[in-house]
Image 1: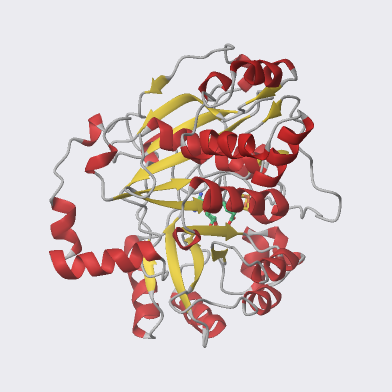
Image 2 (image 1 turned 90 degrees about the vertical axis):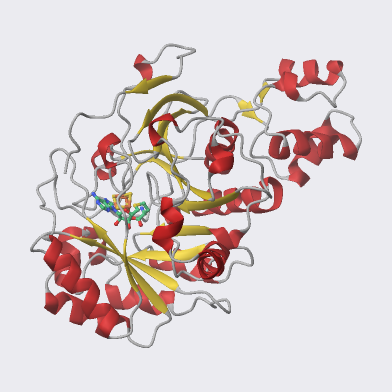
Length: 428
Ligand code: SAH
Ligand code: SF4
């Protein structure tokens, strides 16, 4: 892969979705649509209820509307437009990776992680607070982990209720333009932005697959799938509005991860409704970061940290810094010392992610003892540091392993849901 830097000055790639999806419209937009069809305002409320609470996947599901109105919508080209799960792969650890087909045939990947991915710990989210409270009551984490004793090979669509919580990792773009040297998604280049409806729709499709009841089951969301959410800013924010206000997942259970788009971080800091922030730091100085993330030549670490500092943090909120450990590149004690210097004085925590390998990427994994020393140095200096458990590595669902695995044009029109057998040996 070339180490070129992309310029992000040009207008973002716009979605070219031909169909007229209802999923994605905000209440006021549904109201205008209904008004344009000569309907009263309460029809918009009924449609919103069906789309976002009942999560119907076809126009026939709009049962509160008269059939003549459903036909009128259909005749005018409207569809529900929720992304469709066309393939699913299940890991031995219960993680599921989905290939989602969008209205124009493009595909993205979405990941379901039962019991969360550990990335929420200590980020000040409701999820982690509840967990800490529960841990206090129930004993330690390992005791809890031992409790469910379920057969993960059989974790399926109807089995959510045994879970304490789950995390859904969603994509924001088809591919990515950022060109991080260690990331498989980068190899795709950028195809297009997702619409807000397509981003939130991935969540709805996964909730349906697992029969999730919002309000009863605890769902965390991470915008950490394919793409750079801050290079699709407006649609990312629209998806947050839909997910919080319509679908009903609190923003305190959501984290967005960015590679560091400085102007967008400043804008994000001003948002009245926003997830928590994670910045992919991934290096302890600009020299190393420029090598692994060429985008650093556009906005360096200092500029990014200044932007992050403008974020008004909630009472129990921390900023997360993700740090992918690459063997021999950024995983040595001097790097840990530099990280501590960079983050000193910030209400921060560090998520250490052991690099997940991918074909054609010439990095190596860090030695386990280097990972342990790195974490200990941070913790000893008072910086919360967690090692993220890799999830679904055997099915290429772990961080930075998402890539469309099939050419979407090769998929039949109504592809059946198939399970891809997990790889015989994990690629690590
Ligand atoms: N584009 C955003 C969000 C998606 S990537 C971003 O870069 O932050 C989500 C996380 O996965 C980032 O922290 C990224 O650094 C990390 N990542 C990418 N490739 C990885 C790999 N091969 N192994 C481990 N983590 C990886
Ligand atoms: Fe894009 Fe994030 Fe991968 Fe970088 S790490 S190429 S920003 S998806």
